Length: 601
Image 1 (cartoon, rainbow, N blue to C red):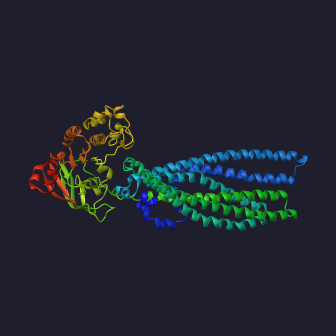
Image 2 (image 1 turned 45 degrees about the vertical axis):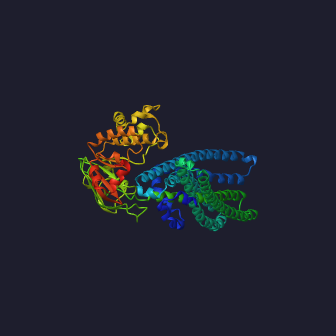
Image 3 (image 1 turned 180 degrees about the vertical axis):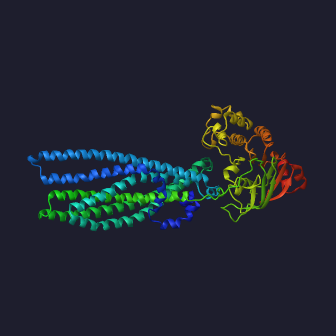
């Protein structure tokens, strides 16, 4: 098993793998340019400091030439003092401008990174559940963290180094031409020999960088999934096997990173050898010019310094090129997330929901299959009408499509055919926020956040008062166990509510739904984790809550739905029977068989 197989990758990642293999340019970085251009003022100030720092550096060789050519005799002492005083001022300017450049460039890098992270995370929140059916959260989070960190390195330091060296290179070449046209012409002839390896090796480095980032994300995804399920791993004694899988994943990540480092090292070595080798040859020719009297020693010294500046800039640019290739890989992965369109989105012109929220629900000839299993229909010609204020129980064997109904009502998915209507409006035509504001959900898998009980309840209505939250806690019997905790409702419950029992977590989820105070209540096995006493109290609270609401209840324990206004029996994606408990028992069939197994009737 490879790291990618162990951890999984988003469908968009797999689908675009062949395209990425051919993509060798820095074009993915352009996707992030809008984030950078928000801060044009800071960019301008950083640019001014950058030019000042480069200009200060380029002045030094001129002073060196004047000192050498005018000699160090006692009669020129005042001249020498004057030049060194000026050089001290130049160094002061260099120090101030370098500090200013560093601050503003670093600020831009941090700001752009924060904006990119916010944009990616906000976009991830909008992606429909179908995306997460195929993508692994660990791999996605690796992009959100590791890849944005790489972007920060580029905008916070690499771009600064690149611009500084580009300015230094341009200034040094200009001064080389000014100092000696003949020698600078020879320098310009060897520049193509230096640029060519940058292009050839740079492409290889970028491919290796992308591979290193992918393997690192795969190992992170495997680690997150394993730690998330650490109790199951330990219970089945799978620590050695999972540890071996993670070791294999990290070894693949290390190998990819080592290959990337080797490629960058080869690129750097080639550039430095070619650059400095060419300069040595040119300086040898310059030395011959000095010996023949065609050039002064100071001029050669000045040319030497500018040549060193140019060579140093070229060497640094070779390293920067590798960093940019690495960042392009990160930007490409981030762009894939930003460019992933949600399968479920608001229509261009949403239909307004009725102001008077009734809570009616209707399914019309609905056909549906999950995107990951398109050939396995879950609902096949499903029809159902739920009147305002009615309590309807949905029962049936596992896999019959019960929970799928809730996903369609909330429009987590769209049906392949047919329509789902809430208060007479097709949910596909309504604004998502307006639709979901009318619905309160208690899911089968209770979601508890790493926060206090109070904050977990308030999650469904952030603007609720403390009194409303405490009342919801009382109705759901949360106050009963919270009173025994050190800080009551303000007790922190740990990641995923690990410090609470299953029944306690479910009661928190019920309190959240009570606080929501929505006209349509969806209960998906809402009392499955409660003990008998707690279930009795919660059922009493639900009875009061249901009086003014439409309620859809999914339950395997038929005792919890015997008093429903109507029981709908679902099997193989279709309604096979409906009626009261007594009516269904008389009819026989699937419901009667399930009831006899549970009630022994």
